[in-house]
Length: 444
Image (cartoon, rainbow, N blue to C red; front, side, top):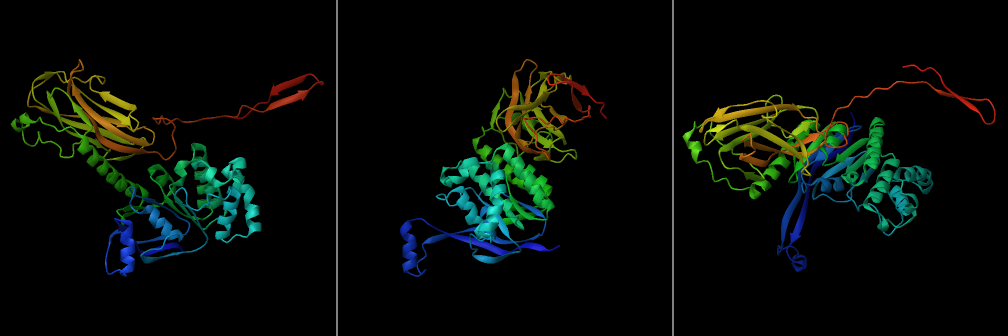
């Protein structure tokens, strides 16, 4: 296939000055007195994008995604390297880029269209479609500085897609709009895909990247860390996010001072997981949770899950004293702290009788993860039947659920749909006042 975009050895350096006067000192000495620190936002970025494909770019905040897109669109010059693209390019960059805030919406539409090579007559023909898609009413005749963020994005997206670009670049702007507008934008993007447009799509939403893109690129620290199938790249990206979250939570976690009895047990069974992190921990220490895991069907650790996929929650617990009828359980919460699902051995009718001190038990729960797309965390517990906590750890594991189809709410109940034609309503007028209504036979 033809190449629509080529990025060759692109690097971008910024000079950081500690004091405003340092820049002047450096200028007056013609660089002999170095007063700045170098920051490389991008380093040696190389890739090609085939015409008619959609490529997603993901990465943590500060990884260089927006800088790369600005270089591709020509609003920023690279320190090193070259960018080549074919055909008309339209960009929807971060909020605030591309429009003059003092101009009205109409004036900005004409200005942007002119920058893409459209004459005033051609833009006037596009104007009704832009107004209809943006749906901001009379505000299109008001200065853009009076717009809300949603109105701004509506007009910017409508202008970008109505010009039928060969290369469309979107930088996380769609997250600002409401749900109705987001669905409208995604539908238009799919129409452009069908028409053969090349799309570069930056988003923090794994579901959108997986649904729209045939390829994904992961940026981290200004470098390309991964390039390949969306699901593979998203798994790597999610692992980066989880590592950062775990590092943050580790700083906030309560130090575990127990564990004296673990040396008395078998060394391999009583070994604590070095990766065990948590937000909060409580209990009388009659037991100690040594490890907690979230596994896929192949029993591999997982942090990016597709809605409906089979999962296994596994915990290993060391008992410090004899206990009777211990209850093991787990609880999944979403990012807002709402309980999504929980289960324990007592609810499932599983009893273990007496467990001796020094004994290690492993418990697994298996389920199909029919949750809606969101970020979740898992808590683990071992307690008595009366609710006395032996060991309870909150926020041990973080994972994200993605869904190919948008789902409202917290659960994906995986509903099926069926319908049939009942017939057509037929109205026969007997007189000016009387109307006879009948239902013709329909077909299923």
